Amino acid sequence: MKKAAMKVKCPTCSKDVVWTAEAKDRPFCSERCKLIDLGAWADGSHAIPGKTVEEEMMSQQWEQELQNADLH
Image 1 (cartoon, rainbow, N blue to C red):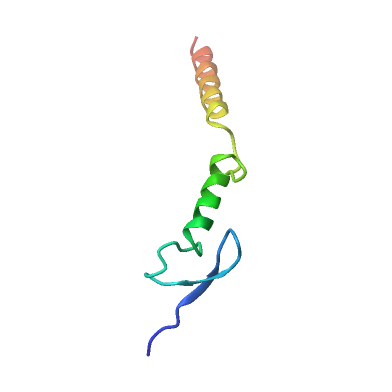
Image 2: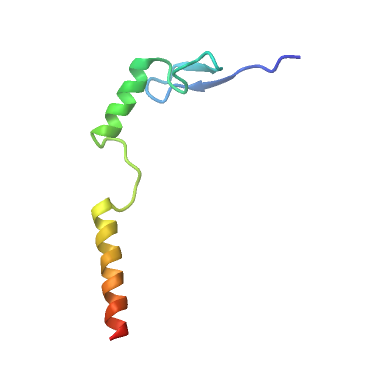
């Protein structure tokens, strides 16, 4: 018995996408939707919450300076 292919929604346009090896753009329905999503990441519309790289580096530097101050 063949297992039914899973259907997902395209993250860009919400069109149904059948999840198969032949669906080369999955989870997107098309190259166009894939590029729209990529553009949103590039322009900052999509982002993972958290500190920026600069903030993270500054906080690490701050921690090192505090540790060095404790050693003296």
